[in-house]
Amino acid sequence: MDADRLTECSIMIDDCFATKRREEKLTEWEHEFLQSLEEQVASRRSLSEKQIAVLERVWEKVTDQG
Image (cartoon, rainbow, N blue to C red; front, side, top):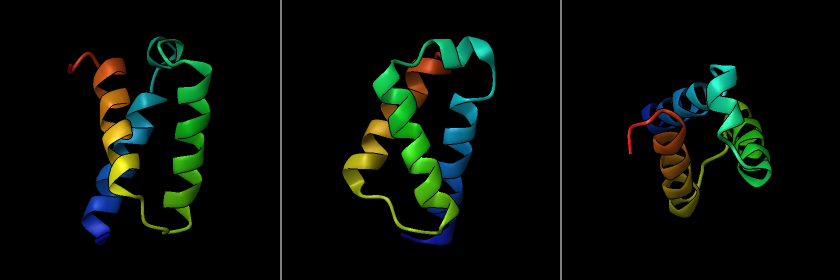
C-alpha cells in the first residue's frame, strides 16, 4: 500500500469520527473496526483490499455520500 493511499484512508477514518452526528451513525462493530484501522494506519501498516472496501462503505454511510 503506497503512502498516498494510506493517507487517504487516514482521512476517511478521521472523517467518520469528525462530528458527534457522524459518530452516532456508527454501529458498535463499525466503531471498533475504525479504531482498529486507525491503529494500523498510525503504525504505517497496510490495509487489505477488504478492509478498504468496508472503510469506504462506512465512510459513505456516515458522510451521506452513499
